[in-house]
Amino acid sequence: MAATQDWMALATPDAEWEQVVRDKMGGKAPDLGVFTDIASLRKFMGDAKLAMGAQMGPKIEGIKEEDHQVPMRDGSDITCRVYSPEKPPSNGSPLVVMFHGGGWCIGGLENEEPHCRLMTSKLGVTAVSVDYRLAPEHQFPVAVHDCHDATKWAAANASSLGADPSKGFIIGGTSAGGNIAAVLAHLCRDETMTPPLTGCLLIIPAFCYHKFVPEQYRKDYQSYEQNKNAPILTQKAVTLFSDNYIPDEEQRKDPLFSPLLWPTGHSNLPPSFFQICGQDLLRDEALIFERIMREEEKIKTKVELYPGQPHGFHGAVPTMKASEKFVKDTVDGVKWLLEQK
Image (cartoon, rainbow, N blue to C red; front, side, top):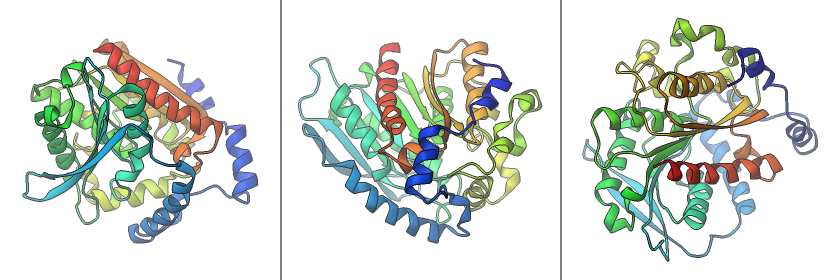
């Protein structure tokens, strides 16, 4: 992995992104930090998703989609949407469980729909998308508990869902969902979950609240300040999400929120695939965590970097060439994880 000064060079804005901002956005890039409350942000994102849906195209042929009501530890039910191939691979369908992004406060099943459909179509996996409960209505650690319970449900019911975890059992997510996936990788390891996870898909993930990044990593942790006003996810947006999900700042050192601080360390985690954006304030915590896994723990990792791209650019502008590559890379990353099993 490159030296820290090279990490910082990754923030130089990408030319395609800048052209889109100039030509399609009137020169003003999106900034989630302009919203002062979650309700108004949800409305904005809902309107944006309706517009984006027209760009996504129709369903992919050959995929069954079915919603299941899944019981949680507190007696509530959440929805899990299962995507399965109509003609499963003759040697069995691997299981992939996905957690959407949105700062633990916004988003839903539609967020991971393109990923789930593509990996099911192209790789023959059975994908389970988890509609975990959101803050501020359901604050930390409800999202983690929901995703943990849903993952165990998917494993216990794999056969009836058409999946065979012995062919591969991957968890993954985007942004906040990537944070949850990293947390669950540690939880599932510590509880020696059966069947065991075989891979982790970490898409623009968060690993540690900025004030609690350990001293030994501080010199490499520059992106939170360098990209504090970058497009889409600014420091103000991070504050909005964090204050609604986990209001007590001291509690943000809990490893269920900051898995970089996991008390039993990071050994024996499953192989992991990372997608990291250069113009993202979460960039360096992902690069630091990947380096720990690869250099200190000798865990297989693969990294795709997107120099000059902001957090979540592929969702904000799905028609960009870089966005098309990003989504293809996600599917190829799952393929790589299945090959490491």
